[in-house]
Picture 1 (tube, one colour):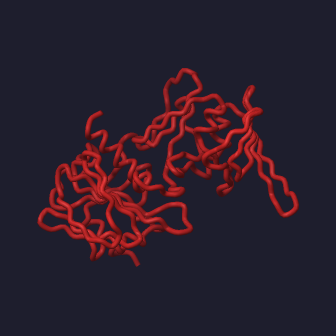
Picture 2 (picture 1 turned 90 degrees about the horizontal axis):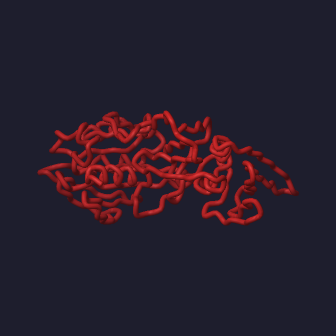
Picture 3 (picture 1 turned 45 degrees about the vertical axis):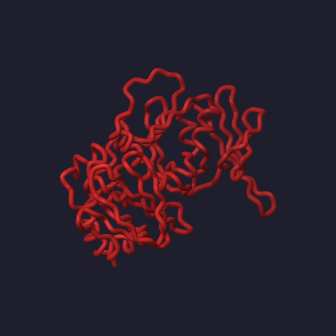
Length: 301
């Protein structure tokens, strides 16, 4: 694998999960799911990651595989029991909500992540449902694409939104997640003499990842200085909001030529760092120089 492709995948992993070396609970990110090359439409609730697993609304993927899905709700005293039944040919799955025990035909299977009600849909681990219904599942991290195949010949597959290019030069803050932006970018980060000086916010988690893949954890509240330039990698920094399922996260890119996509946008930048993260638009993360991001953050109320 080419080094530039490896770095693109590594950076995508970090932006997806926050830090590859820590567990982030229920960090919601956009995922594309295909069944035999055709994109599955999720009209309301969307797939998301939890503990490195993709969870999906069970109905839409099951029906795309040709299965029949029934949802029942029974009230026993003050308790409400919800059960999802999925049937296809000679396979049957009976899945109680909030239980990690699932009945596949006559065999009890224990899930790593229980089925759960989220919004108006029941979510389950995608791999379990697909494989229990006789399909194969493949995960492409660089495209954040789940490919489910049933053995049918795939012709004219749907395009994957965003493709391999995960970045554009339209950086936007996520209006619901700006707490760290104020403490991280204003009066805290500066570039001088070809080096970045940064103090890690007290409630944040951060790590420095080099182009060779080594990881150094950074301590909250401590100040660090990093060289800017080729081979210096990037810094991943995240902050989890209590009571919310997502997190605020950014990549501070020290090497503007970290991969082909970033080099095409910022390869000429040598006296600043590149910030990626914030709001995801059209399946891509925006990126901008630190100077530009600081001006955006100054506009916050």
